[in-house]
Image (cartoon, rainbow, N blue to C red):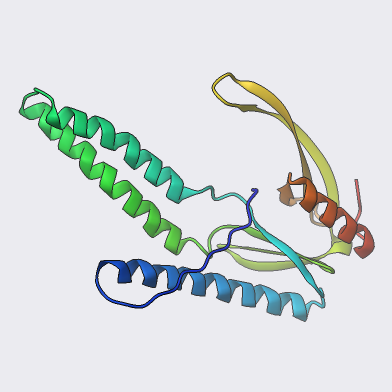
Length: 200
């Protein structure tokens, strides 16, 4: 739940590149429509100026797909050019097919996930949360902020680091979302205090 996602792609034409450009335009159009809906809801609630929006999870499926494709490509080629029999050649072909299909599937998923990834949109007067279930608005006065910490393990050496997260909860004390980025926590705390939220 860390990165703000943005991206534009433009271009016209036909042929192999046109499908990619069209997909980029569709993704951008979906993202822009989502932001318009959020802005309209925030205006309806009188939330005022927007400060930032942040993707909450979702990961980077495109990078994972390309990484997995690259990992499969190397043994696939190695087995294919090696002195092995027909069974090994079949395995090599299967690996090479997967190496091509995984990035394509990841890109296809990326172009259709704009409306499904949960996002936090922060305004002067409150927050708007978006995701597969639609958009919900919460004024600061209806929120309670709590701090939560846990230990996370990083790297191959298993190094541990303490992670501090700021959780935003509703009136029923359910966690709506959380953030760990220091600059975003500072903005949220400042706006929440001004808006009458219950602070940690």
